[in-house]
Length: 130
Image (cartoon, rainbow, N blue to C red; front, side):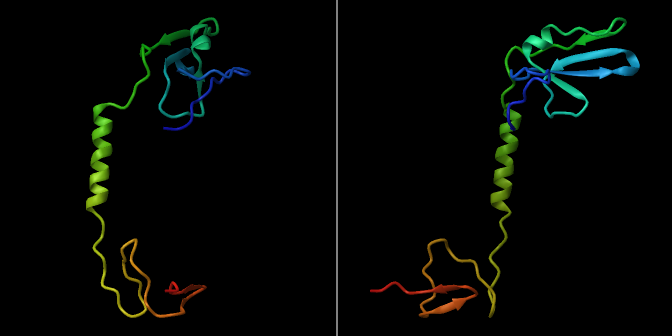
């Protein structure tokens, strides 16, 4: 989840709880729960500005039901995350056989090659003094 979105009203620094969208063809303003993503033609409003919303004369305000508490991750979200982690762990490619001049897959704590002063590009492998 991204950063907390702020109210779109100028000089207001409260966090947004509702999204306002205008339907110009129907002369309607739709005020509903905070949208998942910030849209360019929608306005995020704090609780105070959402409650005191007024529209031009002849327009209608459609107020959608607001949730009493912010929605947290549901069981479906957690299951989807767990499945994605399982798939990523299961789909790791097998280690290819390394031929001459190719790098092989090594364990994270494997000791370097025993050759003293072996050079690879700009790096040099030195043995630890005994």
